[in-house]
Length: 151
Image 1 (cartoon, rainbow, N blue to C red):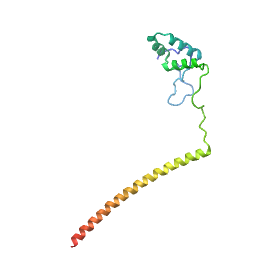
Image 2: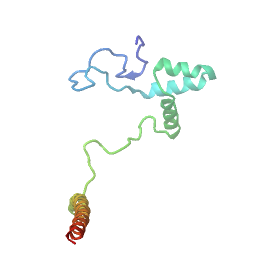
Image 3: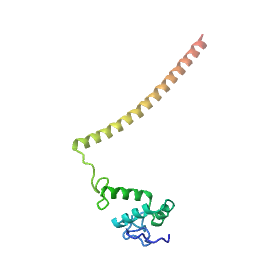
Image 4: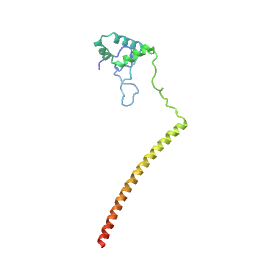
């Protein structure tokens, strides 16, 4: 793109060098950028000082979104800019289930599978019943014809 990396941005996407040991569809892509606390403060201040028509220019120049500025401003106001609150579960953790909960989950999956099989078999039986009813009417019709011809 020809843009230089923003000052204070670590791992900026301006790098054209491939990522080492990368495997998969994003091989060769740069890693996600991270920003220093000083950079965040400077960008919020510059954005806030900019006149109305120049704010978008700052965002484009630094390749940021308005949501970055909003989050950083809110974090600075809450005093959590230096130590951001981590969201979600820590990596590598899963929701712990008791043995009873695991057994219930297995039984619910088995119940759902058996219910689906039962519905399929009921549908087959209903089709066979319909076919037998039609066949019975056909036989009754043929018997009526043959008894009429026998007279």
